[in-house]
Image (tube, rainbow, N blue to C red; front, side, top):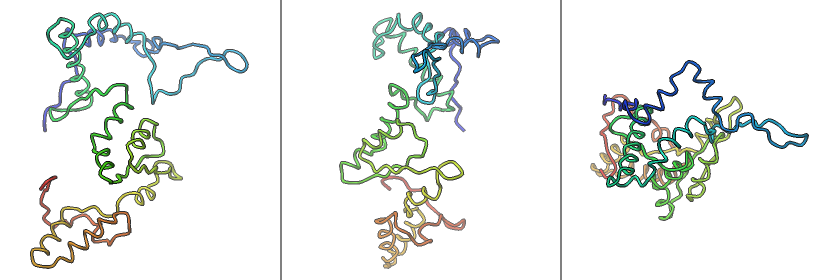
Length: 248
C-alpha cells in the first residue's frame, strides 16, 4: 500500500497559523458566530423576516474567520502564481502547493493522485469532467454517449452533461427512496464485452469458428436490447481471465 500524503500544514505556514487560531473549546460556536449574514432580516409580505439560508449543499456561507485571514495574509501577496521571479510569486506558489498537499491528504490521496483546482466550486469541476472523459470527442464523431444521473442531482451535475451533447437519462426515485434500481438496470447497457467473452470469441475464431465473434459483435451493436444470459454473466471462478488494456 502506498503511503498517504500528509494532510497537516507545515509548522510556520499561513495554514498552520489559521489552524491554530481555531484551537479553542468553543470552536463550533465561534464559527457559527462568524457566519457573514447571520441574523440578517429580509423584506417579507408581512414585514421583515429573518433570513434562513438553506442551500449549503450548493454554496457554503462566507465566514469572517476565513475572509479576515485571507485579507490579512493572502491578499497582500496575491499575484500570478506561475512565476518564482518575485517574492509575491514565490509566496503564492508555496501557498498553492501546500493547499494541494493538505487537500490531497484530507481526501486520502497518495502519490498516484493529483489535486486539480478547477475554479468556482463543483460546477467548474464537473464542467471539466465531461471533456476529460472524452464526451465532446465522441459527440463530434457521431457517437451518442449515455450519462445516467440520479433523482437528487444539483444542477451542476445536470447542465454540463446536457450541454455536452450526451444523452442524459434521469433515474427516478424508487418508492422506498433512493434511485430506482430497476430503472437503472433498464438504462444501463445489457452487454459489456467482458474480457472472458472476448477471449472465448478469439479462441473460437483461431480454430476457424467465427460464430461466437459475430454473436458478440451483434450484441454489442445493440447494447440496450435484451441479451442472452451467457453474454451478461461475469467470469466463472475457474475461468482464466487475462488483464487487457486500452490498445491491447
